[in-house]
Image (cartoon, rainbow, N blue to C red):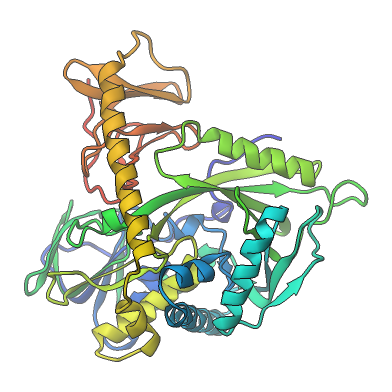
Length: 506
């Protein structure tokens, strides 16, 4: 197998959405400014624009560039073990409210895509046990799904070309190309007078009246601001400490179609409940059907060799789909709360002027739209019973224990990172191609890497909370093990709660 593209399959043969017509004018004022042009941001913008509000969407890169453009795009209500975990951390009623929100989110998006003629493939979804140890988790999740009102069934046989130990099936779910959705939403936002301004990174938000949104290009103002950036870039509310940043991987393959050469590409959407996880789905792209395989999630910045995760998925695919040829490899970042419930609503001490949506725990296609419905209702002074239940949930001791443990792990990563950096002397020679190293240079921890023949030295201290970054060999980036901020080899900020680049060192 060979790699041809280090980007998501969805970007094949297509250009980023053209936003040149939307000019950034410092001093402009809007009813709502949405930060982040992914599925949450664009859907919220459209809902508010339909209600007659003037809206502006500010995006640091381009629409769909981050989580939305790097998803496996399963519009499914079967969320692996999420319901049983939510129930264990909270209650049956909260799990039911979570599912009701996702059900409404899924229904809204399916109706919207049908109206706009966006291609959607209806597929059955499966959560399966790949090992005998996974059966008990499957049993628990099946019970939680039933309690939440999902019409699930237990099956022992699937189209997967390997043995399983049972599965939960939910019929008639959906999948799509997420960039088709982004393009449709962006077009409709603009048709209602909204603007989508790309290449504009927000650095701070002041919750005054009006709210000031400070970017690297100037300041704009709004009555309401929605932070739809994966994780809030404001430290108010300490959401960075309440969330764990997770990175997972996806690969696309061409599979031989001649009879007897390889198993057929499964047409259902599959996800194992075991660890390491395996996500499997088909993807019609550029006139052919591809196989998508994902998994191997881990906490950002705490995996010693991320490239091994990619190789492991490639090895697994070769075992079960002989002759498969890898065409694309990419990864995505998600955020998980201690009790597995997203944080959606107004930020503390923002006077109900600044809102957030984060913590989808890898199920952003339905949770994003559920968040948009909830945010829109709250801003327009409407009420959604399921949203009220989620926003006023009570944290159980198990969730508190999980949060404390996560905090301890962050503290450990901070201490070990600084200790290792101070004890390591940088080598006199440049790192080999595709590698990076952290060590002491003078009085400051320094990160040095070589990518495409260019050696760069940057500060190894994350600009968010001072953690020491680690090298991500799969994506050739510097990742912070504290709260998931990521930077390019030259120090340019990619994503996470940080708002500034790493300092370059001559």
